[in-house]
Length: 557
Image (cartoon, rainbow, N blue to C red; front, side):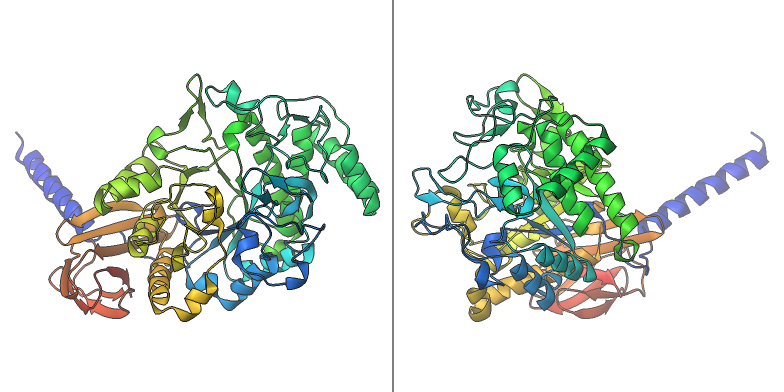
């Protein structure tokens, strides 16, 4: 072989080895640019509007909702003003929350139902009577405007809850909608696609005929209501303009889409969590996304001074019992549906996370999620939770593992959903309560104010949450273990000109500890441990830290 060629090969080999060594030592150089908001890495707080905080006691009773209810099945006073109050106090900012999802705030049925557990009112928001109006128990339009303004001023997005599948139950005060609007004669058996979609979820929950393309008139009860409120003509004009612009038939689902997207166009909310997705034809959500995107673009065009970033409208779906192990498909038994589609949902709620968290230790859990999110779900997202308003099998119902709950939820790849009170160990088992009422107790503000252990738990959630907020690599980055014992890993993320890199150690010895970081940071780099709030220098590929904690959160100083 020609000596010149041999020499060239040697140089190329040495160069490749040097580049490989450099990649191992200096994976990405962390950026000093402003941290971008990324939905895939968001730390989202989910609350029941009625149960979080009562900011206005004057609106606690409306529509004569005064009957004695079952335990935790009536309105308790929480409202939009109460949420805004906590936004202003910095409660969410201190938790590292950058998005708030609140249960539906549209006007609920006026009457109550009795399902064998005592009278229930629509405090939860999922029993709509009039999509065009905010329920006075929750507040007013001015209250919602203020919430969005104050939240956005602090970098917090607002996500509302969209129900297209059903109206509220029929009561002595709430008439059934016309037959061309709803079906009431067939209850779901959930044994195939048809018996999950074209039916009522439960008895006395009228199912919107979302499959219909027939032109239908407004329900008489809405016409009568709007006339009594002096806004009938205005509502008609807006509906005429909507249907003229879109060309959609005046079918039931399109009325509701118009009403829901008005909250985007008027208030500038940043996202919707879509309720009961698998109980509605999948094309409905594609149509809904189109209208959401249009409304969001109109809001930005009309309010250029209120735009906080260039993110698209956020739409996350609730496909009950979907888990990320299924990839992009949900299996009805006789039909598999892909709800992940740029034309509909970018992200779905992950009902599997609580089981994964029970079965897997940290490394296998983190490894599984990084592989799925950068594999089958590449370019999509997942919303992980460990407790919620309607999941009767939470990860830690008795709140005996609040630290592990925080570690697994806030440090796992994917978007994190903190359910109100997760951070303060609010009890999920309430004496005398039945079913999902256990999950919907009042926020435990007194315990936060007076209980030392609660404050310690809250401090842990705050520290991890703010670290997650500062570093998109936690939720959206690549995960890689550095050492198994002690357990140390890094996360890396880059987008455009922004780069982020962190190292985390868990289950460490309390007191003196040494972590290997040579694969990530070079000698001489000054790092900050966000958990113990101290700076350390990388020496000989390691950092030495003395703290009373078993966790280390390293970020570049």
